Length: 565
Image 1 (cartoon, one colour):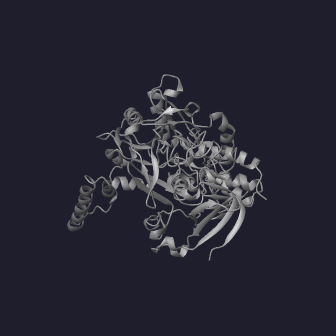
Image 2: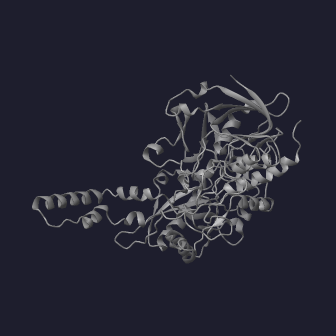
């Protein structure tokens, strides 16, 4: 049976825009409800076993309510998160600010149109500061033992210096120390802030396990559930998980009406008709859509008839923030550097390549190149993929063991044989993923095909950008004594993005964007979009900090306006 209630504000989604908005609203005393479709993930609950990982995907019609929401479109694949804390659960913690010169104005796009940012770096500067403080931003402590033994960080520094490129250890939303101002230490208890923690579970500092992108079971990541959402709940926000919004429309007496369904944990593992789930309705004076680029754009497209006046900009300015994955592989022979990519946080170092807008003679579109780490079990997967050597090693071990048994050999030690069986680990130790992101061309379009979201996007119009990224990846690989390899998706000129942006872009007027520079939808007072979909082009750097700063700035204006009585 459908029920109804009324609050000051409903926030749809709990990622970098939604969590910031929820906290600011609740802190100001506004009655705030957060609707998150996914479940919560306390430390220790992220999937690790093959059985758990096999259920860790999002597809409710198949009885899957997991963390990873995987999409495939023409031209790209994409991975986003479903859970309390949104993308912060699986991102690589980097908190870089958008470069000042990359807030472009009326930069022409291929075909037609242009990219314009209705906000500036100066507009966002105080909000960058505020978000960094809340997320406990800290640079990788490369000069402290045992962190100085993280080889990939040293390798990236060396490559940048030899190539004459700017680099830094970017601020990370990671607790390396148990409290602000304390010395970094591995796996020690973290002191909780005054607002507590909504999970009620202990956390410990980073132990350099490389598991940031699959969920931190130690709680060392200062993800949004540990920070903004915990603070929002402390101030009275009603945070509801497993609640998926299906429809939105203006209320008959003002404000907005939101219809959502609740996913029952008992349905996990069962195929169901999700269209038949009973719905609930909640009304609010202000509605904040923060369901991510795909989620918010889908809701607006699906409810377009209920929201008259949404302009032609809806669905436009899509980009993957220039994401490109490459790989440094060891050279042939026995001379290979060990990078130990599975030791450390996923990203420790960011190399910056300039942009034509920098005014220093740099050509083309700028980008960042970062080291990519991964969990230790990936090393075993990499070594097992060496099909040319593994069968021979297994056969040699079996023959030698059998001969020893048949001949009654007095040698009882198997250490040498086992070592030869496992191999030298050269491939995994000498490989290093390289992560590129930057200013690709935001000319993609999101639309509906039936009831499904579709993206029209191609690498062709960004060919010059991707050529520059691959060229720099090749140069970094070379100076570090390795070989560069494209990821297999690139063989088909496809990319995998974890930073989808655009779809409900900000603009200076309705002909240019869906919403203004504060995320308020043109023609619909009180309806706000605060997530990656509002970015009118690529951020260039990792976008999470900019999305959060835009939301924090929007909250300042939203809170200056009175709520309906």
